[in-house]
Image (cartoon, rainbow, N blue to C red):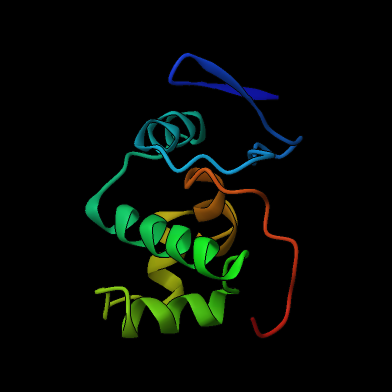
Length: 112
């Protein structure tokens, strides 16, 4: 599987996650369209938070830490699991948010 982003073919795994991160806005637009997601400001807050955490930590937070981080640091005090699953219905923001954000598939579990 692959996506064409900025005229370049980017390889993805069988689940649609990029193998190498792409932090461009076009990556988000292309992958969101492929997932059938119409982006809103709330989507962008989640995506930008996930991208920041990936850059800082080398991985993205699990769902619990994602919600807490969005509430405390991400300018999204309304964040809860129901809202994040509404925004990213195929696996929630901790999974589908990473895919749409142009990040590799989250690997871990646990409290990071």
